[in-house]
Length: 265
Image (cartoon, rainbow, N blue to C red):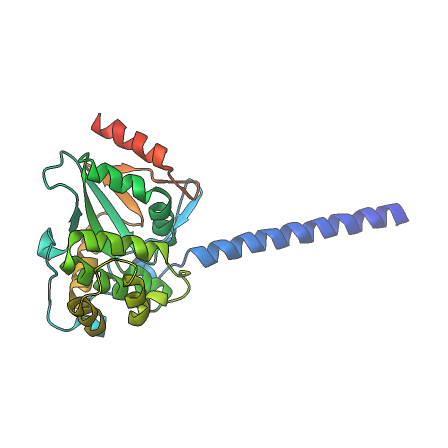
């Protein structure tokens, strides 16, 4: 083989190795972002190039020992067994349903990108928001951060809907990497609660430390699992699903507002 052909062959081999390495790195990034549970607990959904976690009927609810205590439902709840959290005017003409898991990175992306616009339309009376929260990522990722954060959110809700909403936003603004279990530490959650003025009452702190609302969090997750929703975040306006994620990116405030107008007229 001539020196020229040898050089060309070496170049082609190098190019193939670089391409394989790049593909491996892309695959590794996807694996780090999406963790899939076993059997019916979770599946991997790839829709329009978007990978997002999907929960199933065997979430972390009743199997969690912390959820075995007496069921205490926070004030200001609604829906089946007090498992729905409503923000906004009760007589709003439309209803926006939001399905989330506090450990879901795509939920964090939506909330930190478009959350203010979502809230503003509720504050304006365009719709009321119904939050349906899940804890399935604890099973998929390991740990207890989703249900511990949800129980703490229940304690915030008991203090008031506005306190819940502010704490909800603080949690997403400070969401740990989904591979860690930062929300599993109640002391960390209490530190974050300090960012919500007036939230850290003695009752709130005790409820978080004691896990008072852990059984309620399990009940909320059970109701999520009974829905037809298979991934988070899922957003529906008057039952119509909105495409809030496209190509792995959250809809901008302008895009979200346009989607709302298409439904509400």
